[in-house]
Every structure is written in structure tokens, then in C-alpha cells.
Length: 389
Figure 1 (cartoon, rainbow, N blue to C red):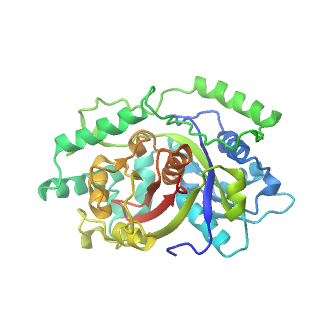
Figure 2: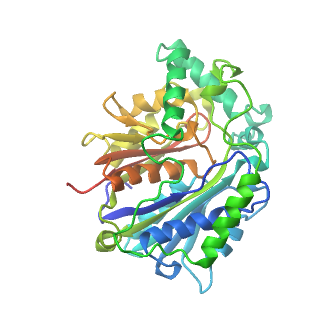
């Protein structure tokens, strides 16, 4: 699917404060305040949503069909139209977008959540590899990303000093006091619209805040930033481990215009995949990202903002090449995955952050990217636009 034949926009976006651990919080308790926030921004109730789609992973939760618990929290009675994808929520947004394009829905709620702290994320993600040749060797995502970084350095595409610059820029953008709110980017509804939070939502939010204050640690790791994790990647080049959730509301045509003064129109989305076998790929390139961007219309006109799902600094280098991003494009003003990386929600957050900049008037045409799998194996690209001011 490439260019849209029906106007569909992101009209609301909410996310949690992402923490290193959320011990004592269930996934439902993590998710519910975000859902109420997103619906409140849109001035909609759950009964106004035509389609609900979510992204998560049973491997992270450590139990089968864990998404059904979250769905119970959303409210599945009276019966609702819903779906679930076992990957990042960006792909759930893609499914919801297609659903609206078919005319089967006018509004959609998309959410994603991940509790990376429940297990050893480096071991868990090895299960994405092919079960015959790679998975038995247990190469974790940091080791594989280090192979990619080494290939980039050997090819002359980057060096460790440039990677350090990417890490510093990303984390500075997400630091407290940065120019734009980063952690909980609400996008305002029309003036005078109700926020939509009820007493239950407030109670849950207070409970979450109180329990989160007791949680140990933040997204910061315990290693020194200069320490090698797997050479040539140092701790600063790697994403934090984090728990969190995010939600967006989609709406079509005039419904979107009624909800928000400046909807973030989705002009195109496409997703592509590299070969599964890492040995047959050139890890310094991402042809699937370039093809997805082409089919989404990213090269039809300049973009001013790019939210890239690059968990490792070296992967931003690959994506900048594939997407032909120059120095005139603001890349990851939110801090990106190097600042907060709740696995399964990080890609959806990239779309939400890009939309939020359009809502605020900070961007007119933005690109959002999401990835899944080792070394940027699967890639989704979306192009968002605000109406001419």
C-alpha cells in the first residue's frame, strides 16, 4: 500500500513516561492512562471508535495471548472490531490505516506496549533469528548491530567520533528542559473540547504515578558511556532498556478536521523486508527502507523532520543514507530510540512524535520510520503532512 486514496490523519498521540523497570505494574495498568489520554485529546469515548488495533509481544510478557489482558482493559464488550499484530505498534497503525481506507471504519484506536524488563531482552530477541543457522549461536542484537557498525566504519561511512555525536545529540534533545516536551507529548484538542478523562482514569493515573515513583532506576544504564559493550559499539551507542506504552487515534476526512485544528495527514505508508539471512545482506545499506520510502512518496517533496527508529547510533547512519536525509532535515528531535526504547512501542512513538510536531506547527512535512528484526531487517516508512498555513 502506498499513496492514500482517502484522507486519514493522526489526531491524537499519548505515551507513558518510559522507565527502566515497572515492577508491580501490570501491562493494563501501564496502558490505561495512555488510552484515556489519547481518547481525551480527541474528545472521543471508547464507543466512538470503529476499529481497535494493538501491537505487542508474548515473548516480552512471558505468557501466551498476553494482549487479551490489555484488550479486557480497553473494553471488549459490547463486541468491538479489533485486531492485534505480534510486532511493533507501527504495523498496527498500518493495519488500522488500511481499514479506514477501505471505508469499513472512520476512526481507529492504535496502541502498543512493552515490558522489556520482564526478562533478558538480549536473549529474548535472539528468537527472531532463523532457527537452524543463527538462533543456535545466540548472537544478541548488540552483537549483530556491532557487526553492522564495523562494516560501516570499514566502508568509511562513519567513525566512532561521529557515532558519539549522534548519541550526544539524541540524548540532549530528550533531556529535561529541551525546547519541546519529549516524554509525554500530548497534542491538544480543539479549544473548548472536553479532555475526556473520567474519575477512573484519574485514579489509575495517580496509582501509576505513585507506583512508578517506587520503581528502581530510569532509562539510564549502569555502564559508563565510554565502555565498550561489543566493539565498536560503546554503551552510549546502545538503546536503554525501558518499559512503556503509546497510543494514537486515527480519523478520516471531516471527522479528523472536527477533532483537531491541524491533523497530521498520512500521505503514504509502505513497509518492506530485507533477506532473512544476514550473510546475504550488505549491512551498510537498507534497500528495503529506500523502497518503502519511494512507495510512500517520501521523495516526492522535501521533508523537514524525520523520526527514525534507530536503536543504535550506527543505524541512524544507514537510514540517513537510505532516506537521502541532508543536514537541513531535523532528525529525531524527540531523542529517538536512544532516549527511550520500550520495545514494541518505539516505532509507533516515532509516528506519534512526527504527528505531534505537525499538530504543534513545528513541521509541515515529516517522515516517520519504524523497524523490527536484527540490523534493520523490516522497515516501515510513513509520510505525514499538515495542511498549508
